Amino acid sequence: MFQGLKIRKEIDDKKGVASAYNNIALIYSEQKELSKALYYNKQSMAIREKLGNQGDLAVSYDNIAIIFKWLADSTYKGIKQAPDNRYDTAMAYYLKSLSIREQLDGQPLLSGSYNNIGALYADLKNYEEAITYFKKALRIQQILGDKRKIITIYLNISRLKLNLGSDINNEVLPMAIKAYDLAKEINAKWYIRKMAEFIDHLYKRENNYKQALAYSKVKLAYKDSMFNEEKSKEIGKLEATYEMEIAEREQKRLAEEQESLLAEAQRRRDNLQYSGILIFLVLVFAGVFALGRFSIPIRLAEGMIFFSFLLFFEFTLVLLDPYIEQYSSGAPAIKLGFNAVLAALIFPLHKLFEKLLKERLVKNKMK
Image (tube, rainbow, N blue to C red; front, side):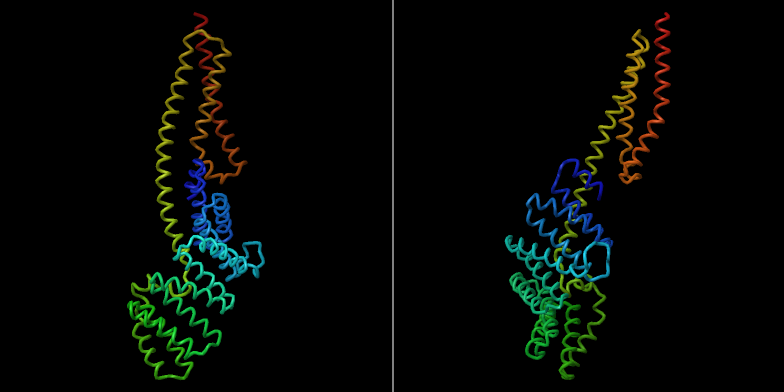
């Protein structure tokens, strides 16, 4: 991944550099190294703000918001910001993303923004605001017809209404039953079980054990379905889903493929250039040594030998640079040490070559 970043920097592909930073941040996010993930997301965001690509910038804002939400949900101390501010920071970035998406009018992504903000308000226990945003997401999903997401939003809203103390029979149950019926309609087994479990719980709270028993039987009948193929497709969609994360994973895969092609093209180019430089160096050394047959000034010979070995030294540095970079991690002192060792190895060769050429020149002058 870092190799891809290096290539994009070399060819001055600013959009590609931003994408590479974004992909590196995703990897660190998956590894829960949130401080590093935040750093690279902010690097990506800074470039995208300069380029003015609003769609990509909204993705960066979402990614940063997600990290701060994770930080707020945990006791993680890796970032110098008071824990109490982390939800506020996450909300600020979500609202920036929403502002862009409302202007772009991309319905699926706009629904994702409403959903993310609704989920964050739910975490903050501001249930009324959460419901407001979930309803905005619901209106879009009803137009788009994504029934699984509609079920998820129905469940989220009904749970929040329950937390607010709304009337179970008139407000909570009707929405939960809508979600259950929709799950039955599309035969989404995991959803059917989950909604049956929730409705069973609601009826028991109302002491309606006859209705509760009917849904309890459904819950038990679908229990094993949690572990079938439906689970892998749907389990991540029951709670407030983060569509941006899903889109980012696909973007990461495509970026990795593109970077692999770029890296292969650069390897072919570098190999051709290395071969050409090596042939040129061989010809230079052969030419310099061949001058020993002629009577030329010693000073000129020394200068030509010095120039030849200088080229050889620089070529060797270029050839070894990726390995030196890897072992030194970019530390200047360590890189200088590598260069000094290389110079110490080449210096005796330089002195030997100079001695041999001088001896040949002396012999030619004596003839």
